[in-house]
Amino acid sequence: MLGQPRSFARAWDLFVDPVTAEKRRILDERWTSLSASLRTTTQGLGQKATGCGATIGIQPRCDFSCTGCYLGEEANDIPALPKEKIFEQLRHLRAYLGPKSNVQVTDGEVTLRPVNELVEILAYARSIGVIPMVMTHGDSFRKDPTLLDRLVLEGGLTEVSIHVDMTQRGRIGYRSPKSEIELMPLRDEFAQMIRDVRRRTGTRLRAATTLTITRQNVPNVADIVRWLVRNRDAFGLVSFQPAAQVGRTRKTIEGVTPDELWREVGNATRDFGLELDSRGPLNFGHPDCTGFVPVITIERRGDEKPRLLRLIRDTPEDLAIMNEYTNSGLLGMAFRDDHPLEAVARFLGALRTAPRWIVGRVVPWIDGRLREEAGMTAGGLLRDLARGEVTVGGLTLTSHHFMSPEEAKSPQGKDRLDACVFRLPYKGRMVPMCEMNALGVREQFYAEIIEGCRDTELELDEPRAASAR
Image (cartoon, rainbow, N blue to C red):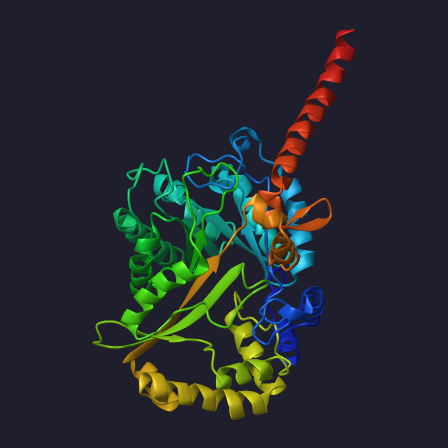
């Protein structure tokens, strides 16, 4: 895991147990915390993942003034917490989420924090087994082309997410965009930036993009998905986030329903051979909160465009494979950020743990799907991959549906909060993000930061007053 030396001893441990006892324990905690109605075969929380976390107070200020923003009006006046406080948050997140913790380094615009401090925070996260993802609008990287390289090389950053949409205000060259089409050159710029950073640093930086979806830009969702398919080498994940009336979001901003959003996503995937009229069977936490559709891309040399295959379909055979996975002994196994030796050991450990299921069930299932959907066999695909005639990739399409205060206070909202997969540490409790944003916890936290600053000023002033006397 992260934070441990690369060694043959570590590889042996992964061969013996490709999941680890700690991951299993935390998965079990998440699973038992879910209501019985959510403990389904296709539930990711408690079976595949332990959840996701985020920092708070790392840098509340932002240099944009977006029309859709979940921070309050006071955020730009809140000082950033000292890095020792952020280290403490990271330790809480690591204990709650376990090895390879998914942690978003976020608040306002985190790249406005002094770069040396941000590097230290990232490096500390890596040292304790956290995989930090810097969440940013990306303009700091455009202003300082060396910044992202430093975060990668000095901070050990392997994941970044760049938010781009027409609700943003203040971006260089795109002050007040009227449509998502106007922002396509900007997306091209960021995609090339990711490729260039990988080339310069020699690292496999993983990149995601997020965008707020409103009644105004939902017609452009299909265009964005088509762009993502073309640029899947740069951005491997997208998070569509329908607007909620939270924070300083303008009252004129109106969100969309999940069905409206995914209908537009399907309008794009249909161009690549994938009929996608819903979010499908997979979910994390409450189904009203998250849509999750990982797709496989297969492209033969000379083809005009790739073919998309949904990883898990809502069919009896795919659901049977998922059900068998829950009993395979491999729940929670993840290769993300493994070093080559660790990845090989973990893979061999998986074969050792569940040989009959992998060889006897998964391989024939893959072969059958390739024959049906791509007109090739698994053996033929491996042969063509070795010859360089075919490339295989992936793209994960997700939607995250945040709640307004009214929704969060409703009985349905309480059920969603109880099953939340995205939490922040506050006063010894892991607080759901919608509770933080929609039910006043963020404002309370910021007020405590201000009060702490006043107390510190008093402590500093008292010795001066004493010496004056």
